[in-house]
Image (cartoon, rainbow, N blue to C red; front, side):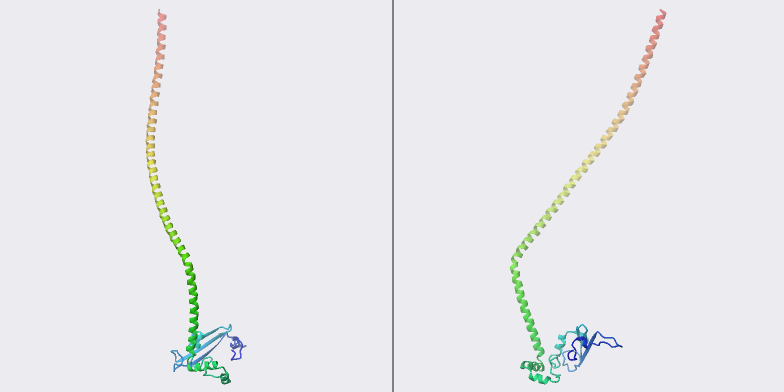
Length: 256
């Protein structure tokens, strides 16, 4: 944006006119002939694209494939056409190069010699190595902390194993007790059913005996009624005989 005398991303994005509406992004592409395979890709033509949005976000593409800015920088390393390359030198750039420090001029010569890519990779590898060393130190600290906690963990693990063993033993005991209770309840139930059967049979026998007693009682009652009737008949007959006897005695007295 600064090269185009702009201060922010919106300055290079079309803001619209009375006849045309504004756009949400600006896009620019550079197309390179790569028939000499100067760029390390398998294309004879390489298109590098940047898309800039009003929010300030950017997207980068190589042959319409999304990529990182880092990938584009690495693509042009040691080709002389990078950001700080020597292929395009602007007005006043030569005086600036000559007046620079030896370290700054060295960067230009390294770019021309084609070693910037390897130097960059070396720096990145050294950073990764440093991060790895820090990670190793952190891992050693973690291992030391784990070793300190290892003995208490062993004790806890032993207690956990003992707990699991006791819980399994308790489970077996509870299962055995449950089975024993079921067997006992079954035996008691069978005994109760057997006693109930006996009581039912006894009740049936007693009911039959009671029916026989009731039948015998009825028969005896009938016999008693018959005997009572006979006695009454005999008593009535005796009374008649006594009356006849008295009548005969009265007649005999009159004859005398």
